[in-house]
Amino acid sequence: MLEVKGLSAGYGKVEVLHAISISVPKGRLVTLIGSNGAGKTTTLRAVSGMIKPTAGSIRLGDTEIAGMPLHEVTKRGMAHSPEGRRVFATLTVADNLELGAFPRLTGARARGDVEADRQKMYELFPRLGERREQLAGTLSGGEQQMLAMARALMLQPEVLLLDEPSMGLAPKLVEDVFKTIRRLKEQKITMLLVEQFAAAALDVADYGYVLENGRLTAEGEAKALASDPKVRAAYLGAAH
Ligand SMILES: Nc1ncnc2c1ncn2[C@@H]1O[C@H](COP(=O)(O)OP(=O)(O)O)[C@@H](O)[C@H]1O
Ligand SMILES: [Mg+2]
Image 1 (cartoon, rainbow, N blue to C red):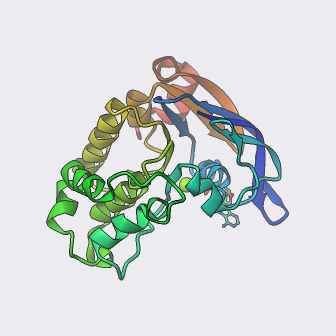
Image 2 (image 1 turned 30 degrees about the vertical axis):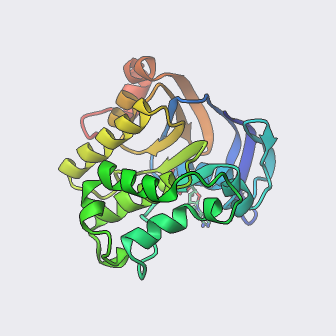
């Protein structure tokens, strides 16, 4: 479904990612783990078209999308729930969700039943259902995180990119986020999950990659990776 090959990208003259290759098969959940600053967010930005890769290929289904602008990539079904809960603060929850479906409303993607999907989001995230008319900027951090995920899902994406959905949340909410990810996996949503919370990510994922300083240093079935001594020592220590 998503095939990234030899992807390099960065900011200005600084290359952050050095020829990384990632495969996300249809219906699978793949996770990219790594320390702070390893380049996880940069990877998702390059895949979604937020920044232009300097080398490599990104195929979404049969389409080469490397170098395409963000809106073109979105139109083709790539949904990006970015780091740091980027919601539209001055719009309501309901309107944020509608904006997530924008390419469906303009005919750039199959329309389907947008209203029914919004109701589904209120079922998946009951807290959003209770706050549908509330301005997004007045939601708690955890609620904004849920809204960012729900908005991305409103695209009816081919692939969902999730950047640290658990970041900054209280332990109970982290648990809720991972429960939701598990439900999305049961619904066969194709996902690339970026997480610093490596143990939880490997627990829910099918396959994983380890990113260090912009290079992939390990990959494998999530279970195998979680029992790899090197991965355990670096990412699954007592601190995690
Ligand atoms: N907008 C930006 N402009 C310049 N450098 C950036 C920007 N965002 C990230 N970087 C740099 O890219 C590197 C990787 O960052 P990032 O992809 O955010 O890592 P991670 O998500 O794994 O913590 C870091 O050295 C960071 O300072
Ligand atoms: Mg990041």
